[in-house]
Amino acid sequence: LTVNTSGNVTVSTGNVVMVTSGKGIDFSATANGSGTMTSELLNDYEEGTWTPVVADAASGGNVGTSTIVSATYTKIGRQVSVEFYLQAIGTAGMTAGNPLTIRGFPFSAAIQAQGSFYTYRVGRNAATVSSSAFVPASDSIVQFFCFSTNSATTDTRILVSDIVSGTSELRMSVTYFV
Image (tube, rainbow, N blue to C red):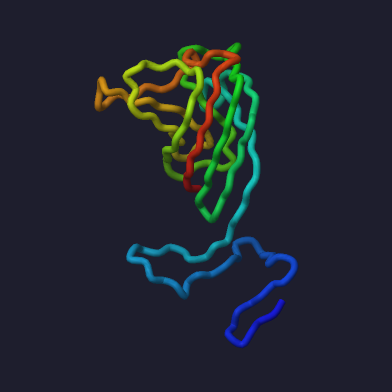
C-alpha cells in the first residue's frame, strides 16, 4: 500500500477490505446533486447465484420444476439486479388458474419494481402489446403481466395454465431496491 504526494492510494496486490460492517467508500466530497441526498457511502457490494422456485403462489401453494440455466444477482448498495433463465418448466401438481410466480429472490424489495422477460412456448392472447415482470414491495418474488390493446386499464397475468409443461422457457431481468 502506498500513498503518493497527491494523496492517491495504490494497492499493488491484495484487496481493500472493510472489516467493520457499514463502512465503505465515502463520496461526500462530491455532494453536488440537485436532489435531497441521504447517503454518499458505498458500503455494500455482492454478487452471486440464487435458486428460482417455480410456484403458483407468493407463499405456500404448490411448486413446479425447471432446469436452471442461470440465476445470478449483483447488489451495489441498495440496488439489486437479478436475472434468471429457466428451461423445461414443469407444472405437475400446480393450480392451473393461479398466477405463475417465481420465488426465492436473494433480497426482498423495499418498493415495487418492474423488469423485462422473454418466454418461449408460453400461451397468451395475441392482443398483448407489452409485458412486465413485477416485483411487489416487501416481497422476494416476481409475477408476469401482459398488457393488451383491448383495454387501457386491464392487465393479464401469466397463469400456470399458460405454461406448456416440460417445454416452456422463461428468461427475466429486473433491478429493484432493498
